[in-house]
Amino acid sequence: MTQILQVFYIVFSALMLSAGIPNEFLSFGSPILGLFSLVPFYIALTRSKSFKNAGFLCSLEFSLVQLFSSYWLGNFKDFAVFTVGGPILAYFVFGQAFGRFFYFVLKYKSRQTAGLLRRIFLFAAVYTLWEWQKSIGFLAYPWGTLFLSIYKWRLFYQIFDITGTWAVSFLFSLFSALVAEGILLIPSAKTEENCAAASLYAKTAIFIFLIFGANICYGIFQYTKVRQPVKFAKTVLVQQNADSWVTGGEDDSVTISQKLSRQGIDQSIAQFGQKPDLICWSEAVLNYAFPNATGFYQFYPPENPLIPFISSTDTPFVIGAPVQVGSEPALFENGAVVFNGDATVQGYYGKMHLVPFAEYIPFTEYEWFCKIMDKLVGFSNGWHPGTKFSTFTVPVENGKNTLTFSVPICFEDAFADVCRGLWHAGSEVLMNITNDSWSRTNSAEYQHFVVASYRAIELRTTLVRSTNAGYSVVVDPAGKILADMPLFEEAVKCVNVPVYEHSETFYARYGDWFCWLMLALSLAAFAVMVTKTKVKDLNIF
Image (tube, rainbow, N blue to C red):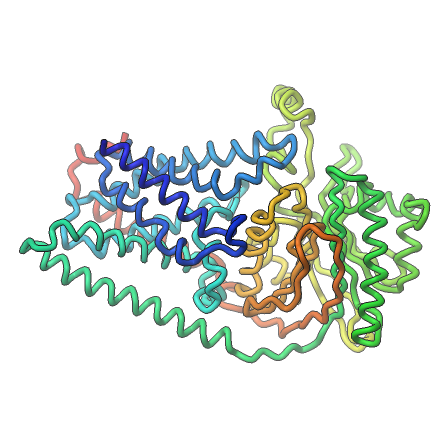
């Protein structure tokens, strides 16, 4: 019966966290659900009877959260076997390791009263390290995380310019641990021993609420702070809603994008009395690789060739297209091509963080692996990762000023390390281009937007997202939405994008220092605990 109850707690916890993350019913999620989501998880782990049992429970939690919150990955065509099954399998394995850490934290010294503060803070530290671990590296996927549930509480996450998203992971798991410990104290409320525990619990709760209060005060200061733009860039965002995977392919994407671009130019002239400074199309609009494709697009599409079209607008363009970077063998990057107003190519950016096993396939140098991939998904090659943090410059404000911007591609705007690298390369605005229409779900679009929006706060810069189906939006350095467009509709909007002083935040300089601190403190605490534990009690298998 105990094991059945533990599994129930885990399922309940996974459902709460998944409901807190943007979903089909709550477009931007629920911070309240996220705040309490780990309470059942914590209680289930405290009732574990062994390291092995805790590992299983943790694996179940991680895997279910992934399944419930990112089920839409099943729409990723032939890659679904990897995009759905891969993370679930990986998180089940990782859960075995993290579950053992949680068990040691929560069961050390048989849950003595004096260890209450240690349990709460170490639980939060280890959970933060879990979300950090799943958000970095080759297999990085920062979805299904606590910080995705915080979006509506903008005051609460202004601290991201200091700590990155990890402060929310820590504070939310800290709060859940505090609530869970309070629930566990109730059965023994009238015992003499519990009086001491209740006193320590009250002091711990006050300390945690003071931390929360300090965070909110900082949030009020940053959110209400007046930031004056140093210039503006009139930018047309084109949302063609023509997914090349399922519709008429490149013809539809280009033709619709051209039509919408003309409308965007008319909008700019009507609103601002001048043509736009930049027109931004989405990811993967073009199918043929540059630079060789330049000649091809002089004549294609036949009814309105692309290169002459760009030249006729006398406006710089950003367009998603493949880029060839090698000839023997031929290597292709999932890229962005930036055209000057005269339709000459200013430069290219190649996507650096590729979707594992979908855009980038490791081990393809081995013939046996290629045969396996050919049988599973029908191909064994992928994109080559980009190698340079590229920026581009266009004239703005009728040539009186210039804008230096970067073009993180698709889910690159979810990764702080990529966006920090682009910022350090001189980018004043993050101009993301994305193709998410394959997901066919609103929740996928909003989840991607939410995790991307945090980059604006971390770097205190403007984020622009031009997508093929949504969520196309402009976000200011405080996380406020300045303009947006509806999902899964043809739409265009000219936005006077504010550009702010290129000043370095604490997070821009030091990156994930908060997680490294959590790791150092956790290892130190574990070292002390292990030295005080009998060897026979450390049988983690």
